Length: 104
Image 1 (cartoon, one colour):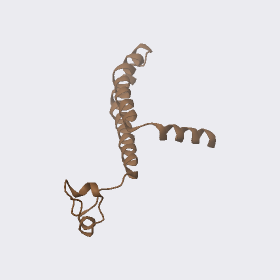
Image 2 (cartoon, helix red, strand yellow):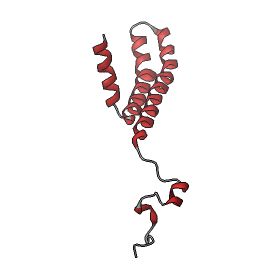
Image 3 (cartoon, rainbow, N blue to C red):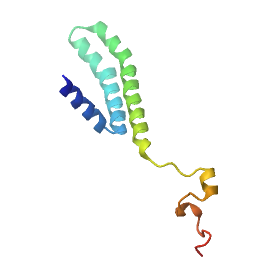
Image 4 (tube, rainbow, N blue to C red):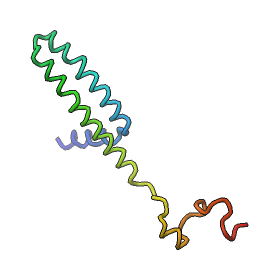
């Protein structure tokens, strides 16, 4: 059981944020438009209304996963120097502008 949960966690960690956005779009289209037709064809006409209500909930779930993934991807970036770092001279040389002092 733990092997399959590790495999699922590994799969979810490899999906990019835009992958979750695509899954949200595809799941919304399938659950909102395809599943109700299949339910009616199978003789479960009452379920077609349930699928129409379920589509936005599934979409929101995927979009929340996309936002969490996008947030996690940005955690390793180095923030730009703040005003207190710039006054102390701790910023990089690229931040100094076209003619940094002492480099003329």
